[in-house]
Length: 577
Image 1 (cartoon, rainbow, N blue to C red):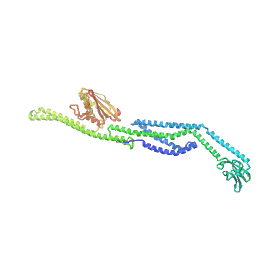
Image 2 (tube, rainbow, N blue to C red):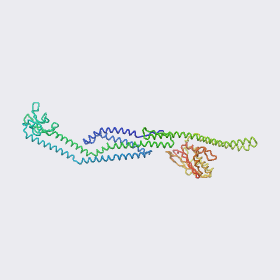
Image 3 (cartoon, one colour):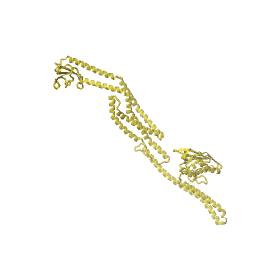
């Protein structure tokens, strides 16, 4: 029977693939996430949230499956679960110690950043910058208006004649096609294709048309527009744009500051918790991978100890314990071969001994048979008239020895032929007293104690075979006590390997069994009695073993012997007991 190792690591490989795939999607959506969060100050959209939160959700599902398997092993109390629990504890302690500093530093950093944000007034800085820009623009406007009012523009016909800060002066004449560029003096950057307005004064600035300039429209004549451009400098509009950009960022910072706790939770769920979950899942799978070979070796060793030499463990290629598993398999195979050879040799030895014992037992009665026949023959030849005096004695001796031989051969046949376990059942409390009753009357010097027999126990054996087993044990006990003493018979329910057994004990107060003899009690033809065949207890052992039971004994010289028999209990009887 081959045992295949089972690991969760295949699931973990699939988990790693899914995890990598989700990480790739997360990287693709991270740019969008930070763009929306940092530049717009809002929580990511639904699609981004689904992608981000799919990683911890998937990992939680895998963790739930792994935890359920672990819980099942704990409830079932499978071998090695304590070792797995210790490994899990080590992993979790390592993860906690490894992640605690990062978590603490990250939390403190976020708190300090928030406190730093709160330490300055972004709104005041923004408003001050805008006020400064407005005031600066107003100063330029006032100065420009003074220049326009105090300058004789008819004399400004060259760039050198233009007042300071005036970039250019441009005249437009009204013709049939509309306003046309008529004259231009100054910086070409201030030239326009069309007048910005047809009313006197400062027109509204439009960018990029008026970038770096303030325009002033004058109407010297009915068909003439004079456009004066004031040079603000290229940095003025750039500075205004920078102020507005920073103002918008200050607004984003304000929104982030209000949502920082939500974003912190989001950060931990999306970027911090998944590695923890992944570590726990791998820890559960890894502990099972480490402990499974050890558990399987333990279970296989137990089964080998129980006599199952067909166990073979299939090791994974590259497994760290592969060498140990292969050595174990080789050892079991060698044990199986050795056991087979030992059993074969033992059977040969047993049959040799049995044949020698049987020949010896048969030879013993042949001598008196031969002597009786020779005695009758001699008398018949020498004194035929007196042969009747010895015929009856000689014939009785021959008949007695022949019956002994017949009983011996019957017992040998019982021991040697295959025995099918009986399918019937008996109630011990009914059969035992019937067997004992015949010995109570014939052996008045023996006290039988049956007070501790449970009457409703039903055992799986037929009446005739059980009667033979119990009768043999009782006769041996009577012989051990020389016909005087006490025999106590007890029953109790015991449980072995998930099954219920009836344990029967027959205890005598005899002389006990010596240690050398105790090793051969169940050996065929071994006996310490003058008239014994040495097949009684071997036959008892055969009957008990063939019915799924077991027999053994304890003995002390000078104190007595107790034989124990465990026989399977019938299901109905087991429930009743």
